[in-house]
Length: 325
Image 1 (tube, rainbow, N blue to C red):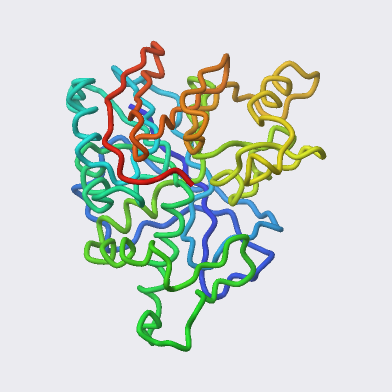
Image 2 (cartoon, rainbow, N blue to C red):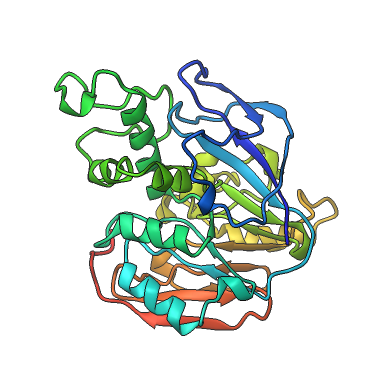
């Protein structure tokens, strides 16, 4: 099966606000060996880059490369689950998922938040040995959980603490936001924390020339210069080509710019296909080389799985648990 090379942003209390190191991610001694799928052999790699506004509590893997090798029997990319455990289980039944026969899942981020059972989804993802990428809600939960694990003063119960002291970040976390409860649940199991924290910002499958991210990519920059916040949060591009978090701030889709980049004289990457979630308002967006699979499950839409090898689509209907932002 596929081996794995991991490059990571190692966030710690000694990390400066504007300088982070891209390096091999060490597995914690608390990791449960039984959760390894047996496919992963990790080779070390290192580089350095700057100007990435990453929380020192992010514990973020920048990119994980599943090296060329035997392809899975079936490979499913799954849109945003958002704590909808019943629907996730129904989808697994619908596709007749069988890990032992060679099936694999790639969860496109936002496993947690808004739905009724975030911790149950994380546990089920571990049981299925699913690969994953980190979504913007997963990121908030991981940062809060990492902060809680590292804090001696237990600031959740200290009124002097209003915001997590993360350094300079795009989205400072308040300690009274709705992700705190999920982070506390995640703290109950080292395995659950390590799993969600281990979801990389980008997952790459060179054999399929395919990338898997939560929100999108900036086509004007190579992969090692992508801004983590926007990979997990972007919805469109501004007039100057830079990513925008809100659709109203942008003037064009990043997916259209991606298609143009692929046909340009100097493309920024050899990867051609991008599978992503996050864009629930747009529902399914199946293009030539970009495939948006957030079909709004938590808002009463569908939970979608796309077989990456055949492009056959599977969907289950979801109950509505939240109102769209």
